[in-house]
Amino acid sequence: MAKVEVYSSMLCGFCYRAKKLLEQKGVAFTEIDVMAHPSRRAEMVQRSGGRTSVPQIFIDDRHIGGCDELYALESKDKLDGLLTPAG
Image (cartoon, rainbow, N blue to C red):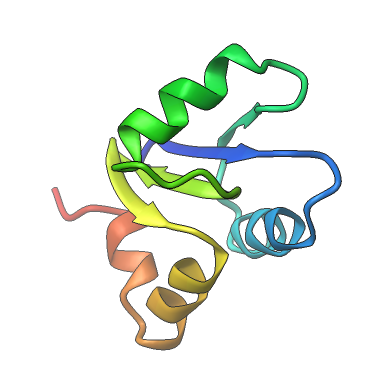
């Protein structure tokens, strides 16, 4: 299974939607709450190429984007391939 990281904040509806999709797919992920751990926000911005909004989602250290991008991958049937790499 791929390593999935989600930078989020507690009061973010888009974060909730993204995490819900991952949970429905049975995907374990590491959540990094940038409100609870403000020092991690700079890390998120650097890793995401300057994006400051949450969520920011990474699969196997590859930046996927936010909630909309995650759902776009799902609608194009490309998300499962990223979550369970062939091997």
